[in-house]
Length: 259
Figure: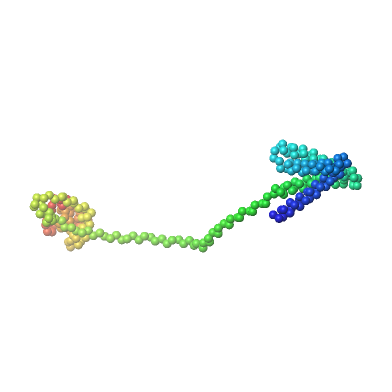
């Protein structure tokens, strides 16, 4: 801020000096005609009009304002250039080109310095740049070695044989008592062939003969079914005896069990 203030003060001082030279030349040019007081007033009016018109030409936004500013600038600036140049030529101490340069130079310099001072006054300090956000540092992970997972084939469990339990059938004592008392019992559902075939597959449940076969009556007794059904089941598993069936007689079965 201190440097900017010193620069503005310097520009104003130089502009004031150039303006003083311009005013002095104009006063010397018109003093014989108007006298000193009026000559000073005329010089100040034209000098200040030139500076103000130059400022309006550069900053005015409307076309009409710029047009009038140009008219004032041409009139006042032309008058200043003419008076200062005529005064330098009338002295006769310098050649004509040098006299024109000396007479017009202060006028042009005062106008340029005035415009430069206006720009420096309107100058705003540049805003501080916004801090650049620093991207977060991504965590560094150690290199990963891809190892194929060990595949284990499932081992199928060995099926555990289901040991069917042979259930001897017959008319239980409670049922006989109920029948004797004249009470009706619910009919018993016949067992499926799969269950009976499972019973036949265990020798400890249905005893075999020496040749590995099972008499029909024995099978009917152990399975709790009719003779015909026992013969059919024995034929399915290959245990049907081919010889005469000499096994003990099968106890009487109810109509529900004999299917």
